[in-house]
Length: 308
Image (cartoon, rainbow, N blue to C red; front, side):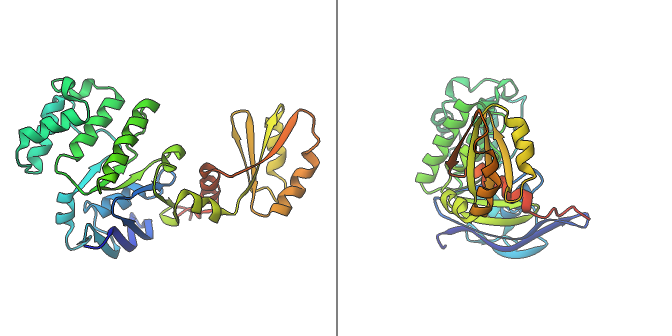
């Protein structure tokens, strides 16, 4: 097996005559955490399901864990841990019963020992008899992660695993993810949180079924060629409305009491901002564009695959 745990190209899938994944190519190395980003409906979940053998691609080829994604889908399914967007375990079973059930599904040897070890490792041992349906979002997330690790997978596919979870639980979850990656587990995780994206070794951004860019967070930002200024002070709402219509301004995004004003042509952006530099009560500063700036720009520029 090569160091590429995921290595696919030309991956495509259509539903109802609409192509929701369009010629996606992706390569993820062993032990890396790859952040899979994109707006809702962009094709992230469909791509993940094709990678783990739950959906058959209409086109494309490649391997996952060294197995052909079309001919050996069953072998992939048995070796991948897949955590879905929504909690998918049995809410009327206890934590221990859910883990025991998943261990049985995967024919785990020494099942009772493995279940107990999972409970202790993820700090669930004291809650083992609690019904899953009574857990908070953070504890449900922890249980779902434990369940998809029962068979010791070398690839985790995590579909928006921290949606609706509080910041403390998210941080603890990511500490666990990095511990798994340090142990050689490869992780593809879809997320809408930019702070989580920055925790990944590499990123892949998909919009309307097309993979737009891959690379580290620094490479993605540099490739965008965005120039960004921030404006702070009073009267930002009317200022934003004015700036959006100015040539050279590609994007105006409010962040609390600050506006991020971005463009691709530095000289054109400077000309657009010049009339506003001396406006009373507003302070301008040059800033590094963030991932959120970059992804909003890419989403705005991507063609919608549902446009007629």
